[in-house]
View: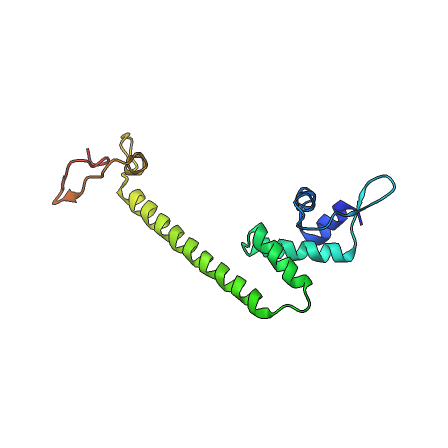
Length: 147
């Protein structure tokens, strides 16, 4: 099948197929007499494997390692499991970081009055300015939205 058909069958764009070939993640495709790429069922299965690995967030390097393990019929599953556990730990760290970002942004959005005035705690935070704390209806110095 040609690259368009392989792309459709694998769910990997033609551009990414070319890139994966260029970096050596997948073997170069065979060529027709007119130099068009030709892919077989094994190539498409390999592309599906790469797509699924990337969709799970594995890096290109991790995906390459997983492909080598997949190819090695004598492999120990312990190494595959170790890679997966390490990736889960990385994902948990990213989730924690994203939750902290979400909490910070939600707090800043809550503080912003969203009115016609130019002052905004979101922009002040991005600039690194301290925010004023409201106490008993009065603002302490530094508040960007209570002026």
